[in-house]
Image (cartoon, rainbow, N blue to C red; front, side, top):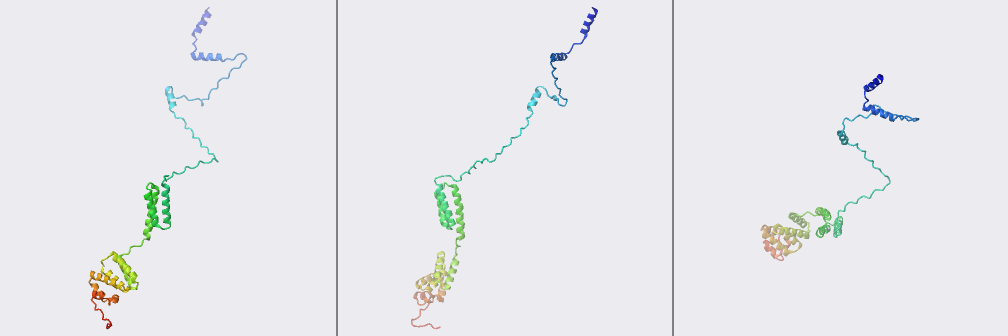
Length: 270
């Protein structure tokens, strides 16, 4: 009686097992091998170096931290080159000229003008290009090219244009032709000089001398009279000028310059 009581007291005095220990005992009882069976292999424990380190951030903060972490960049896929495949046809450039009804006609005039330029017929080329501006004002691209060819015409015509001869040059040429006996050419130069300066006495005087040498007495006297009207000194010059010797028998000339006409049948004494 006393021994049974003492055993009960000892049992009461033993500390109770914790919840973890009870759970561990229950797991062991479940995993005990049956009769004739093998005991299941125990789980291998991870090496201390391979254990996953606990995250310092826990709970909702840990989830947010994981969500904010950028994903690793994925490598771009390489473009696969396939040899032997024909390339697509290139895109044609845009057409500069608009296809209108007058485009072909304008191009025809431009080609004619260019052809005349190559033939060095610049006046005809200018006519063709100017008609292009008049007939086809709605072709800006063609007109721009026509302007450049018009500038070529201007430059070439200016280079081949003869320089203008001044009045002094015309008179000098007339005197040179008179002195070498080309009286027709001298008369032509003197008349051109008179067109520019109609009231010049020495030009009328020279023209009268050339006409006298040609044998045109009436017109020579008329030009000499105009020269004396412009300058009285020309009367004295004509009286002693050998170029008017053919007019000494002419009554109008002797009266104009004050010469005594020679008596028929008499010769002048030297």
